[in-house]
Image (cartoon, rainbow over all chains, first blue to last red; front, side):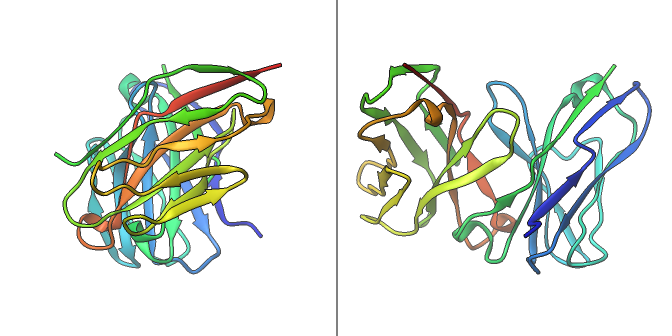
Length: 113
Length: 114
């Protein structure tokens, strides 16, 4: 009954460091997405994938990379962290995409100092 | 462009009061509509959804009706509890194009007091 698992839950980075936020789902969902949540701005789409080997950019992709080598995993890489990337990051997956909704992970709270 | 507009919070109510959180959307085509809830320190949970006009989604005493003529999906509950305190997000999604993403409103914080 794991659903969507994100690690780590909390992370502090120094400006310029890189890191990978992990996301794994055990529901055999084809669709996966990464969002960031900032106060007063709701959730904004960073990158998404419609299946293994297929990724594309969302609304705010700059400074982030993704890959999808398996159906289960969809890691998000921060290339060179900046204070503007301080946020809460959510990974989500879906069997059928936007039509029927997504299942969300519990989030990663990232602070860049 | 495509968007979701929901009422700003925080909304503060007494326990057993009636709740309405307004949501209107702008979208092409025939989107599905959702309400997600986020409890403190947690991720988003799907509260209810409606996939076509005039559908009513319901769950845990919450209801919302898909009104295509007014492009609205207002969330209602007849008697709120302290445990309903959370942030509520309205969203729409489509099954074609754009990676099947969800478009979210900015969220409405609800505080229920004894």
